[in-house]
Amino acid sequence: MTDRRSPRHVRIFLASPGDVVEERNTVRDMLQHLQRSPLVRGDFTIEVVSWDDPDAPVPMLATLTPQQAVSRAIARPSECDFTVVIVAGRMGTPLDERKPDGTPYLSGTEWEFEDARRAGKPILLYRRTTASPTADADPEEAARQLRSVQQFFAQFTKPSGVLTGGVTTYRTVDELVPRLQTDIETLLPTLRTAEEPSPQDQGWAGRVQANVRRWRFGRLLMMLAPGALVTVVAWTAFSTFSTVNQSYDASPFAYIVRYALLMLGLFVPLVLFVLTWWWLGREKTRRAA
Image (cartoon, rainbow, N blue to C red):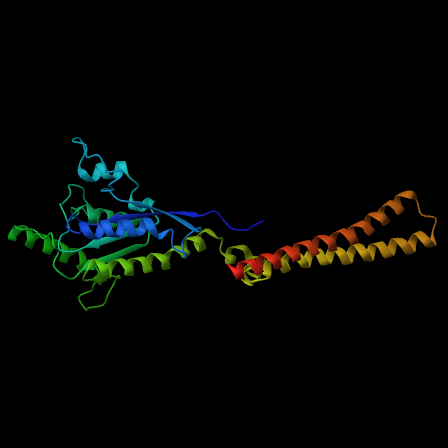
């Protein structure tokens, strides 16, 4: 017997321009193998969503813009649990699609970032501080891309220098991957917590129950307390019926009720003993594991 819940399926959207190929490939491999780590295995399954998935690349139809093709073929960032955005020296190709304020998106990467942000989904944003190995050879294009990158990141800092959003910087892929893995492992448990109803929404009884459940033997107590109450009531009623039957000429039905209470008083403690034995044995096995 086990109270272990089924693994939570997690979709992580990977968004970035085309100049961080090494980062995309390495991060994709890391995320696909993350679910086999001891902290994740059995609790989560991870699906990486990206337009350049080598096993399922997005078909680019001539009748659609690239962003429309991507949005139709795979889940949007707003439909995923997390979005990982990685930017180096490029933002990518500008889009015909426009923001709600009428300005064009700098690239598909910005579109994906905004789609996740509008949906209120967690976004992990990483910026490379060293030159990209696949930087543009055309100086004019490189300068335009750099301006787009600076424009994108300007939204996270007020003119006074106050930060309005978190941006994690990195210098190499070897520095990015372990940091990203740590961030994902930190965020994953929040998905489990979000699935559970808030005790505040269940009144005082829900808050008491939540506090008891957080105790190692809280659930055992929740089983034993009602069982012990039933046992006390059954034995008290049995004693009362016995006294009444001896004092008066009781009907056959009274004797049936008496012996039913006797069996209930014997059966409930036996069930409680078995549950306690099973629970303590399970806790011992869990600690040994």
